[in-house]
Image (tube, rainbow, N blue to C red; front, side, top):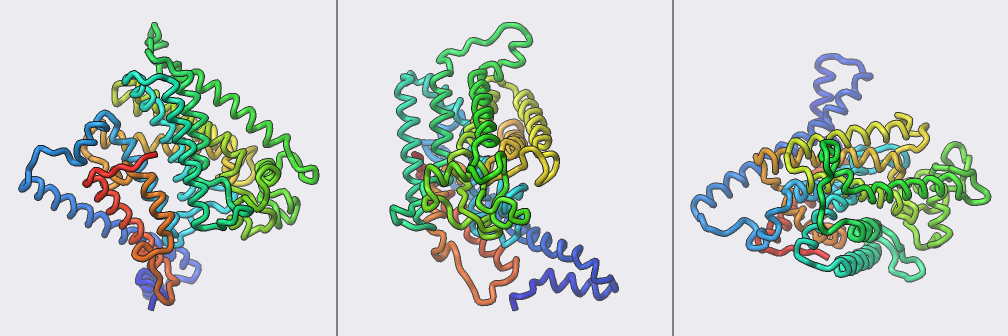
Length: 469
């Protein structure tokens, strides 16, 4: 009974009724896919509206002087709601993608080159981490915290994040020390945070002096990050040089393919080019990710999508976030902030498209999450800037949206990430039924698991439980 969903049957009935030829079946397949997604979204939206109305009624009945998230809200009142909302959207969508995303390929990750919806999540976390760095460092300076204590906190947080990521790797992989995967999502975040936050804390002035002149005032947010832009230039130059110069003696220089049987076995042992070669040389094959989609499809030696060389461009992505955070810090008007963010989004999108040659496979630097190419950094940063602009407009500029239901997950993003990783195969977050073969059933199961974590985040926020490193 689960082999054909309602929308597939409806599409077939309509096609037979109007007498359309079989070549039009692709149109009805698209309709069935979108119909299932729209139905689920409509149900979730209805639940959200009913929940909001019920909470509004109860707040009128049980009116008190307490803040919504308790006393700790006082500590984050000055934070932009858009930041927590953005982070909440990212963590909710990450959980949904990791739960299978209904089996729709375009909601998951690209196998090698290209960009799917799931590929936008991880760079969004890196970028928003960078956005928050100027705000947190400025707050620390305002409290009179010495620079060395800020650096010590950054180091401690990075080490804890890295070790937590190594521990989580054993949930899906081996816990044998000789086979332990070293790098991963949290490890990549930890390295980028250590480099970017440490560099900004070292170079940022404690007391900002606005530049003189109309031109200086117009670009004061860019001038405030001049050292960060210098570091971006150095990192991009280093990454480009390594990518096109360093290679295995038996592999062509500048190779960017997945190896194996790709392109008629042109470079079967050269998976990942310079990035894969460095990981296998310094970390060893056994300590890399073994079950990537590219390896299952093409074969060849393992490549780690969160390996060493990609940490360089990940730091660049976080530095681009620092620039967006400086804009929020120094540009006071809503219009100026959004205009600068959208202008930067357009510039980064065009630059990324040019690097990729406006194609999937034939540009100088194709968009590739596994290699974390510069075109991937620029395009995903443009998407993040656009999403932050939308969130900021509705939550902080117009104040017509409080960020729910995403703000609470954004306040406890690290707890939700760890929790959903540990409970990856546990009921009630995940379940299976016989003949689970349709997108609709997979979609319901993924939405169910994601919704449970959203509910848990709201309960934690209501009880004033906020977990940070």
